[in-house]
Amino acid sequence: MQRYISSTDHKVIGLQYGITALMFLLFGFCLMMLMRWQMAYPGKPIPVFGPCCTKCWEMSRRRRDVARPLHAFGAMHGTIMVFLAIVPLAFAPSATMWCRCKSAPSIWPSRA
Image (tube, rainbow, N blue to C red):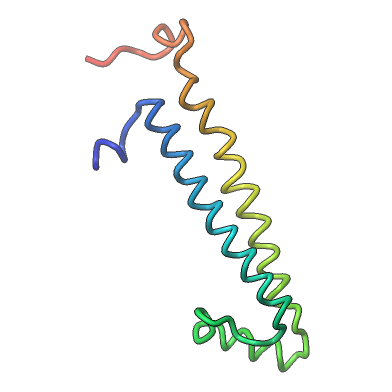
């Protein structure tokens, strides 16, 4: 496991980028589902995360602003999907093939 985490092999690094991007893609999907829940049932707590988010829901009810959690989920969803899912997912294939060019051995010093 230590060899996988601290690897300098370009193929392993590309695989790490791909796996991490897919995990953030799943997290962005979960945020999208939370946004859909908030639009369908405004002001009601989310079934699984309800006890954790009751303070946020109470604040939004006191202000009579039921769209506040929806806006927060929308901002998080957009940021995570663009910067933590799409960009690494686009970079992963190029990271696995980057050092396959013929000039790569002359760029990096050899290991002893």
